[in-house]
Length: 126
Image 1 (cartoon, one colour):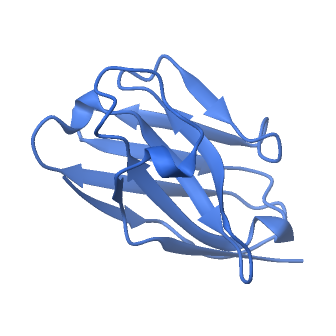
Image 2 (tube, rainbow, N blue to C red; image 1 turned 120 degrees about the horizontal axis):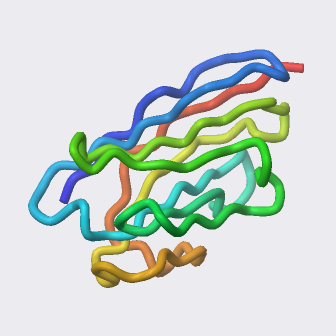
């Protein structure tokens, strides 16, 4: 499995962005997927996660109500729609797959994810 994250950029506070995580490889639609982020000088933190079907989603409290995770299995792509962006959302955003949890609920724990994309930078100016 290989992942390619895209969609980051420089926006103003209150704007929206949609990140994409395109996967390649066999069976990619069977795995839970997570988005994490890492701000300068900080650790990588959980943002959102989705199960294989899209029917189960989890969010960090800091993004709940503003971000939406979804997936299009026909396109092998997971999205993170980010609305009402704040300067504190500035970070490198990573998507990751938990290939050890086929057809299971997604985890919110970074160490449970095996395959990581390269990251896409989101910068929100005030």
